[in-house]
Image (cartoon, rainbow, N blue to C red; front, side, top):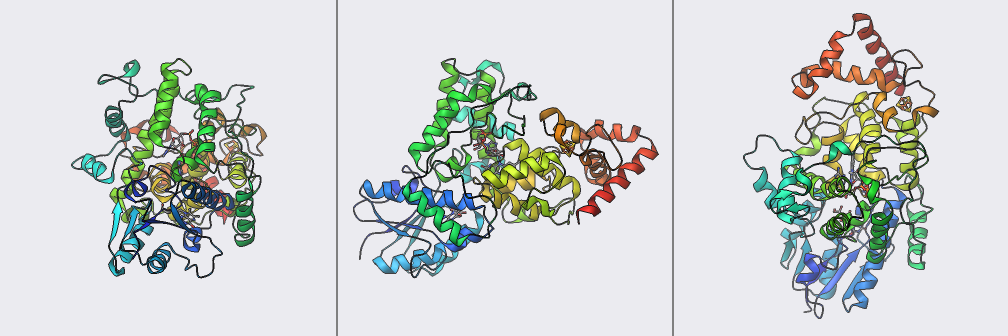
Length: 508
Ligand code: FAD
Ligand code: DLZ
Ligand code: SF4
């Protein structure tokens, strides 16, 4: 009998992972497997599959170089069972292993599959805590216990205290915990960024691109050009490039959107963080150091660190606290299908065309594009939250359910009724116009409020609030908005309802 089998999933590509720390290089065998079940549980963007497979193959190569025995089952390998559980069973038999080591998977779906496997496997299976996160699932449950309402800001302060990031003893650096109000500058004329670092494709990645082109020809999205980092070294290089070229402006223009500058000052590191090529805490320490050495202002450093130790950890906590019920969230009982143009970008609305277009090109859109354009629109027109969730899970290279689902169902659709966010992120065309340059090239007029040339967001916004008043009317954060609606005359109300109904029907 040989050693144990150490499972490394496609989003666990970290040398310091719990499983590699617990495994014994001399006796244990690392199992990595490309399987149709993981590649097919939603119709992933071609670039997402290529990124995960290429990063997995490079990681396996690095482990071998460091002396690990790695059994890498490629997608086309003969006998590939098509599932992670199936591959564990086959490998245990192949090597006559006396145990299996794994890390808790990031998605409930796969956790269930591993739990079922554990029951039928003849050898013991140990599932370890994923210590790449700063807050374990148990710690989050303890934090949430007894609280009437969960709010990210309270959680974030605890994480600041726990990590000591941007802390001056037990006080926040600069006297404030949160500099968000400084981080909402509209894009000024002539604003340009250097964009993310792009990497050439090596032979190994070429093979993956050929595989994806062949096996996933009908999946959405452009496979090429492919320029993601697929090794830890390159991912670190991409992050350092961000620190030096964009971080200083990250805070100021975090919410801005430009048609010709898709990435602005965003880091584009979520695909790397989520598969384990970058370590969240190290990234935050580097940003803190950049602030301390005067390279970047406090609002940029704090804004960035909050996304990682605040939002990223918080949404994961909410996901595990509420799964599996969370996926059924649908407080507004929305039931419309996702408009077909979400898969093509073929719409007259310039903002949606730009955000969906770049999503199909790059498997990337930044937070405000996801939240205030595609997400906002889907909520206003009443798309079934599950359909919205499946779209986000498929189209972004960084999408894994633990982070995507709460962001989609909770933050962007408010489908959980306020578990995650204190009010819906609903906005009219005015917001999009202030924060972007999309409206200038749109067939609709953002200034018109009604009629066939009016920006659809303008009447859809009011119609959404009006038709959901029984659910939202008591929300103190919306009191002023409802007062404004009530001050409008009956004719305007009728026009809003008429235009919204006609527009929504035209989508079908
Ligand atoms: P930056 O803007 O440069 O931010 C830096 C990092 O902060 C990100 O890399 C990310 O790790 C973290 N971060 C920022 N905002 C969030 C957030 N709200 N939740 C969690 N982490 C955050 N992020 C994912 O990683 N995967 C997803 O599947 C995902 N789905 C989303 C769906 C919707 C509807 C919305 C509104 C947001 C979603 N996000 C998701 C959050 C956010 O949009 C992305 O993390 C961000 O756009 C990634 O790009 P970046 O690396 O350039 O981020
Ligand atoms: C996303 C993804 C894809 C496309 N393919 C694989 C795969 O073939 N093998 C694998 O181990 N992991 C893959 N992944 C990542 C998994 O889907 C991820 O580990 C689970 O969703 C848990 O977060
Ligand atoms: Fe979008 Fe309305 Fe502006 Fe057109 S006018 S780009 S639909 S916000």
